[in-house]
Length: 495
Ligand SMILES: Cc1cc2nc3c(=O)[nH]c(=O)nc-3n(C[C@H](O)[C@H](O)[C@H](O)COP(=O)(O)OP(=O)(O)OC[C@H]3O[C@@H](n4cnc5c(N)ncnc54)[C@H](O)[C@@H]3O)c2cc1C
Image (cartoon, rainbow, N blue to C red):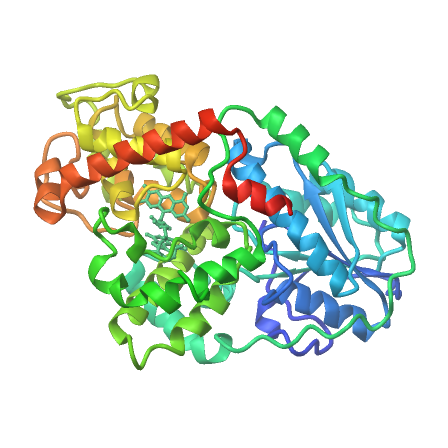
């Protein structure tokens, strides 16, 4: 889907009009409720899609509601990801209620649930947040055809600091090409959020059905199987803000100064922000993180600049790739030079070949790789540096780049709490297919794709220490599981 970038007809301050696209105008216009279909940005604060929906409702003296469509295991989600999301939504529904906004949880995909729901409400407008992923874009295409004629449909990029279609109208080659485009637009887009005003008109329509969250979570998690929830990352908007700037252990309050020097050391995982699960589910806004980090630039310049490079440039480059490259998760999406070199070397003899099952069980001859795989399986978040090594080794140990890529994406999306994200597809494509990278000295198997090896890791960090750290982590996780099936973060999030 590539709808034209059309600014809405009337001014809807205070959300920058560049963030908003009209996917479907309404005819004739009416003043029924406005509904924000929340998908990727699951928060009440710092959310441009909600700000825009509220402005739209206020403009036509209409009430506002929020709807979430619960698909069946979107992109193969497991209990780990679904539990985190649903517990976050439970918190969110309370926060929305405090703002006077009803929250409707609809069971099924958006095109099957929203048209009937909006007809029933007599709605005048639907606002969606933005995702570059294929299934979400297909849903929006389908909604444009299935929505009642009187419902206008707007899309707001509430995830990126600079909206993806404003940053660039094409597939960017690398961080080097997108960086100046983003930086140029920051003064315009990296601005403070307005306070959400109380609803112009109270909700008097159909009341949202009561949600028995415990029952819902039990049911969904039972069906979602296999990969259990993790205990270290408390879901929800408040927990996300605590992770960013909490007094006790917040990233910006307590750990920022080590980010620049230590972020590539897997033995020092606390140097990282740990924000990716919150960013993935939209429980925190990247723009809020950037605004808060910016305030600390005077005292911590190097770390702030490096953090903003990852948070804005690299993350938004991933959205750019998935938005403009329909084959964002296959060899077809690689640049020509990379595809050629990978195909030239696809039949090269490998020292080891492992099946998907062997890799999944961390049964390789490389203890460092096994440790990273186990960190992901048990902890749900592999260290960022290890993710590169991990994916590159899969290229080295499988029957060619296509198989390697599909195994890497399968494992990443199954076990990572932040999986099924544009940054994940691009991370795998960068490691295996050289996307956003340059060609390097040609060598067997990898061709001109950048190579990483065990010896290089040994020079960079304490490999044995990392292996021992993961071993301890796995032991503790297994013990906790056998002692008590409910992890601490999950217990806390029930209250
Ligand atoms: C093979 C591979 C797979 C990956 N899979 C995922 C994934 O499934 N989900 C995911 O969110 N990220 C993924 N990444 C990108 C990156 O490794 C993670 O975003 C990062 O490790 C998350 O931890 P953090 O929030 O503590 O990172 P921090 O270093 O604290 O970074 C802050 C934020 O910046 C962004 N960021 C950091 N590094 C990158 C990067 N290389 N590309 C894009 N954005 C970045 C993330 O939003 C991150 O949360 C992957 C990278 C590789 C090489």
